[in-house]
Amino acid sequence: MAADFSVVLDELDTTLRSIEAVLDVDRLRREVAELEQQASAPDLWNDVEAAQALTSKLSYLQGDLRRVEELRSRLDDVGLLHEMAVEESDEATAAETERELANLRQAIDELEVRTLLSGEYDSREALVTIRSEAGGVDAADFAEMLMRMYLRWAERHRYPIELYDVSYAEEAGIKSATFAVKQPYAYGTLSVEQGTHRLVRISPFDNQGRRQTSFAGVEVLPVVEQTDHVDIPENEIRIDVFRSSGPGGQSVNTTDSAVRITHLPTGIVVSCQNEKSQIQNRAAAMRVLQARLLAKRQEEQRAEMDALKGEGGSSWGNQMRSYVLHPYQMVKDLRTEQETGNTSAVLDGDIDTFIEAGIRWRRQQESVPAG
Image 1: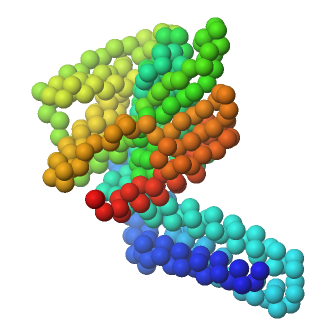
Image 2: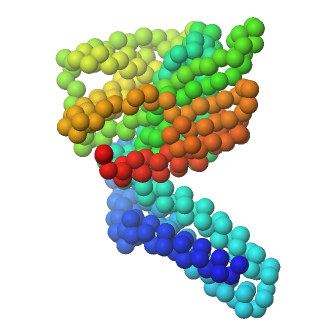
Image 3: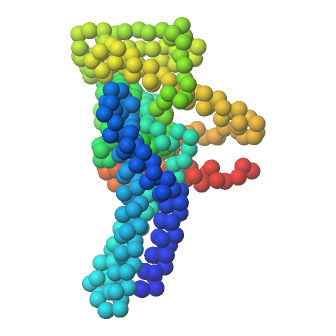
């Protein structure tokens, strides 16, 4: 057992060293010190949005630094403690160090996943849109289930959410919803959730109790920053204002504060009705439109690169996960083969294992040479 312990300890030490190298702990300490200095400036909150972005980034980097330093300290301690326990034949302490090693393995694996997020926009906040697709009222209900799943996931991690727009379906569920996850690296983390999600269950809306398959789409975009230069001339957009409405058509407020923006050259339409004022809704809708246009630009660049490489598109679409509630219980990712029978936990936001498997899978795909 001692031999096994030392083998695992060496493996974890190697993994942690590579994490420390990728995160560049010395640079991380310098960056945290610089941000702390900026955060102590007396005029910091004169620009509220910039101050929030700075304090959010500082908090995230402090968390990274604290995690890697704590893991290094715990790994060093557990090795020494295990050696002493073996020398003194202290079985209780030896068993305790083995439990601690198992906990360390999980924590180091989780931190390693974070270091795999090195894409151009991975460090950004995320803009998530969920839409009901084929399947009628069941698809609208499924879209609402997915929205709740992601909001519960964010809540579990204490990530702030900003809800921009929810379009309710007539009978049940939602046609679409858009919200921002206001956390650094939210885009890199959630981008692996993009694609078509499929639900199989006995439909609660079918009076004959038949099995129904329905679909909902998840789109994840990086939140636009000033450095992206997504300029939208006024003459390229049409702005309509309308009255916000909630489920069942009830009026949320009595003024025309909701805003719909149409980008005339591309036909992209976005709306926002969550804020109290028309000005706030217009600003939020513009942020969503900028993110969509940035994604369109990225897509066009990727298509050009693929055309140069002579690569074809995906042959069976972008279906990525199945949620089966009948005749058995199973959630399965079709790319990574990650699966669980605990469907209620997943739909309650327990999706980290799926996200981590997706991030590792994406990194493997990127490292496979085109053949």
